[in-house]
Length: 299
Image (cartoon, rainbow, N blue to C red; front, top):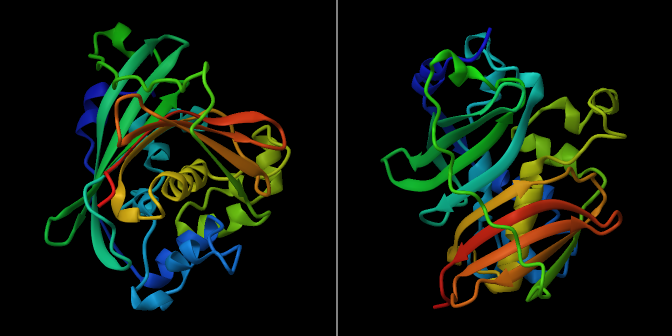
């Protein structure tokens, strides 16, 4: 069954209502390694509700795990060759700081289907608007997926969409302005999956081997969260309220226990825009690329 452009663009997604607690927010931060150093006071604010009487803080990237509709691409009505689906990019804009606990609603839809041609795949963009129950918009999240087995549908007369504006590669001719180094824990993927993504690729060695990996890999969105933490630490003085946007491309998987090195450049002429990428230190392997971030100016 080939994909049907009109069906996917009009596909109905029930609103995803989710109640999350301070415990969930702490678990999310712990799964990304915050709290590994018990004397890191900037991290303590995300895993302990009693620091300085300020209450618990929430990492902005937690928005990507809220209101998630599940792995719907494997449903029979989609026609998607889901086994060959790759998560290519993640883009997110935060409209206001996430509360440490709330009831939220995720409104999901398919916004783009771009045909690359027979044998070349298709680019699908899904969008999630994350709102509070009174309709206040918290975040807009876009997932860019590469459907490697679904190219060529426009040759039958179906439409194809103009792709999203391309992300820009990081500078190659000058050193980064900031470098952040974060060690991940060996059990990081087992912790992160408790935030809602139970794909066995991240837990079961047999499944990972069948997929061509030597062992379970870390979730791409966990790496996304690690880079968010690096941005806050290096460029925002740890102030999560200054975070506005992060777009990034997934270049290669990270194995739990590896060390992530995030390199950040200021965009010339801007006080709020940054470019970034991340490598695995042990293998000198680029794992996240074409990153763009926006922060607000300090108060």
